[in-house]
Image 1 (cartoon, rainbow, N blue to C red):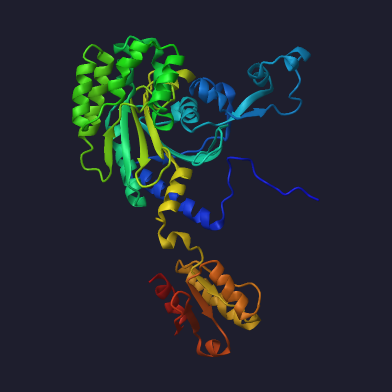
Image 2 (image 1 turned 180 degrees about the horizontal axis):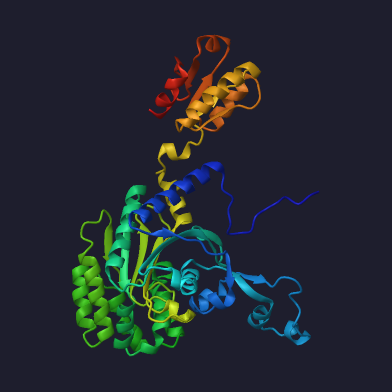
Length: 452
């Protein structure tokens, strides 16, 4: 007996209805990106591992999907290599390429390669799948789409302001209530300095970033395991638990970080961004526990949480001043955001927020009673399609019940019935599938009624 086919864990098939919903998400985000002057690019699904490794921290490197070298991938391997229990070393010899982990690092590589062709500041957006060898769970997939927008070649904080306006506009169009969280890696660096653990900034940010997932006690345990002294962890507690308005938090942090020039610069940057975003439709909150675990962030960082659905971050991003320097172009500053399309898909499903017209593919079905009737319908079909109506004809002259069942299964709102009487009058009998009402309609009027 043949084995039942399946797909890898952490991946999904999407039906036509689901694809209609996903395209609504992608098109909404594309439209908003275009409003702000962003241009679209694409990069390969696979990159050289030399491009990807070392850009996401130690934990990120472990989640890279590696691709076996083509041809005889064992050539150059010794018996000692194969028996040695060093999987990283073996993988390094067997695999020169990997699937992209995100869209930001490939974008940085793109900028360096195509620098002479780009007018700076360069504003790009990119909507493509990424892959992570993570443990699949609710809201977390091994293959998922990101919808990125980045600006490189400008240090102006107005870029951060506009990106937050994009986030606000997109979720307003979706009808999803969100909280936009903001912090700054310079503030986190200043905190690490003030507790005497400047060299542990990566360990501190990686641990703090897990606060929502594992809780305060587990974060403190991880900090201790990373070698951070108990007195330093104790000094962190009031900062992690800090509450109040954005202005109150900024004032407190200005006092706490008075001895750190880097920390104070981070406070200034947050204050500037927040001062320009007073008229958003959604709440924006300074969250000092927000760390964004990726090592390349150097300034403002962002994360977006849905308020009415229990799910992880649905958008994130931040400022990265040094990323292109890794590829030989130092000093080119960038800032970007990424919408998690798959999580947004789940949020819109749970809240049932898809506009009806976006999930209805075919608007009009012509019933097929035979060759003469089909010939009449094909001429009318051409007219309504030219007018922008999504229409089709049932390909076989099957029983009426079967054709109407097809229309119901596809949620087609209108059915055009054409028999001898209709052909004699040069009209179609139009049935509204929702109300059951029928009317004789001239072909020239069909499109207006269906659109209308």
